[in-house]
Amino acid sequence: MPENFLSEYGAKIIASLLALGSLAVFLIRQSRDRANADPNAVINVLNQLGPDYEVLANVVVPGDRGMFDLGNVVVSPYGVFVITVRQTVGKISGREGDREWEVKSGRSRKFISNPLWENRKHVNALEKVIGSVPFISVVVFPRGKLKGKFGNNVIRLGELGKFISQNKTSRLSVDKRDEILKALRKR
Image 1 (cartoon, rainbow, N blue to C red):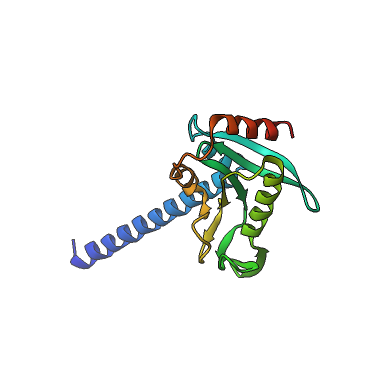
Image 2 (cartoon, rainbow, N blue to C red):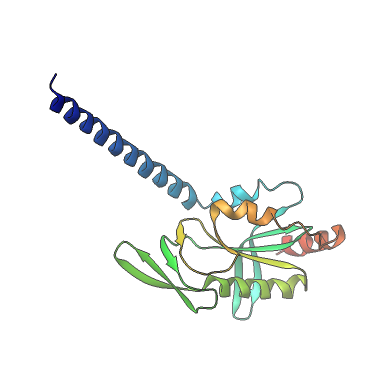
């Protein structure tokens, strides 16, 4: 066989393999994004935390101007985790103190209110119900790509379990946890 034929044939094989590899990466990302879009994706991660963590979903508490539906609250010996989930798709950029964060998706560009501020409102409302306890705020973006200086508590879904698990300083007694759970469950 001529040398040109082999190099031409080899180039086609390499190009085909690269195309298949790119397709596989695309399909895996699409699958992961669909899984992260599942409303139960966050609760599934939280339910794997273990016996030290009590997961409460859809806790409703009064706020200054109506009611807040807190998507997920986790009560543990290490504090009360107040989790705000934003299903924003695209590249999210901004800073911790900015009023709004920019979201770019394809050619479109929009702005969202800083979810850290929303989370702070949730913590404040929760504090009025259960009192002053150690709160740990976290904002989770299951589908967005984070490109900014948001602080350590703005994370992707894949980081949620680790974020919660790394907080291991005991701060709440069993009695206080039971009191908090009782107050939140009757809502």
